[in-house]
Length: 271
Image (cartoon, rainbow, N blue to C red):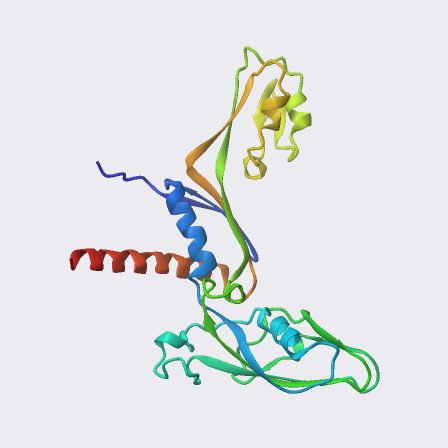
């Protein structure tokens, strides 16, 4: 028997911090979406650099490591993944972009930030301008050429488009009103303060904040409250690093899932 469900999505927050509810899926699909957001969305990141001069306190390797984790604005229409590029991944204007950094502390100490990075294409700027790179003292300088390319989070974390991505079951609180004495111990014990007394009833006022810790259940002396969850409804959260718009991140993740499913279907049908 086929398992067909009506899937619905409710957007709670959709900017740098994203929160939405998906109903009608199972835990396997939920985890697939989470993993695709983390690992299957292409973004730009600095892959290597030519250090021309570095008299700062940081070794070249540490400087490059810091540069590589600066999120870069990504133009998916202009660049290709190296393995899909005509150059075969050797590096060309279709799959990589060069950024310049030339800073000298002439008059006193100077904090070098992501705003000092200048992209050759005029588009691949850092997503944030105030990310610290290194502090220079008077007379110190850094001159380098950095090369950024598209990559996937499954290769290295620097290509992940989000800082974190997680989901949890949608909580359900059941209260046996006959046994409930309205002592409010469960309300006091809840670490997220998600419960409230409304019209002489214990209700879950903010299900999005419930962590399913069951502290309210443990606190009830009459055992009148039970914490459960809906295994077909999930609350997703992620924090966008700024390389791509949030809707593009979700769209590209879903496209990757569909592409892999079609490829599996093609392989199976060829047997």
